[in-house]
Image (cartoon, rainbow, N blue to C red; front, side, top):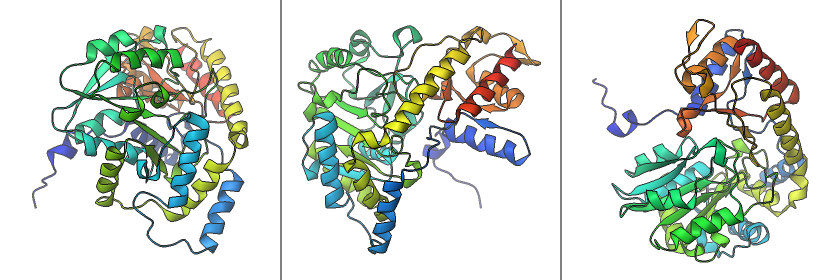
Length: 395
């Protein structure tokens, strides 16, 4: 029969991070020694105390459909976590547990965005934001930031991007891909602009909240006037090394949470029952129990910045969170290296994969064509070897 795919899927981009990871796997299968610095996935194992909770849940016969919006005691653990870490007070009807924070974001988009609604995305932004907005028939509006400003949107830029069609603003802090962290003062400045536009909804992606090396994390929902219009998105994938467990959640105004629950009920229903039980244990634990991972990421950040700083042509800032560096590599554009002419970040990323056997991700996927994303969620030995290879190819 004739292939008749929807325009929706034909117009959808493939996730660049997943595409690069797949390409790296293909090359490994061919026998090449590929060092993967493309995926945003901790290289640590899930802590034993969380795994033990999952085993106990299996023994307790948690094997039935879970409530669409999550188990009641998990929702209470999330409420307690928001109060402890973010100074935010929610009720159970404001919490929705989903199959990863990506589904949380998709729920919000499909529940709130109408065709033609504009969504402001400070660029660089996480690779899936733009396409999730487009799936919901919204219009992504990119606000370009610069490495000189640590890839953070200013209040003036936000004000200039707002139009009568603006429905939402989406951002992450700590940011994927830049590692940038908005300070409380910077969020206060953005909030001052948003107070003049009371109908704009904020989606604050805080999945990297605990992987923070600076002054600490501030949730914009805790700032005066922002609580009733902010959807705070979080999950256990990054800080707890639980990427494959697929648990994300939101704290939101009740009308948005109820709509997300309705949307999820028609798509996936409740998240994995065993993973939910393990998440209760993860969230109830003091943050000190995962600090060893955060400390190691901090050490790796410094290592990577020092080593990349030795390569002429890499423009670097100092990211204060997550586990990425996002160097500007535009100095290489127009140059021919190993017989390949570098016109953009995609060419540069492909060069590193083919000639250095190092997988990174082009910044074009994140809305910034002058940069590449390098994940340092890898061992120190792998990081040293990867950057040594990159240096040799570029020299």
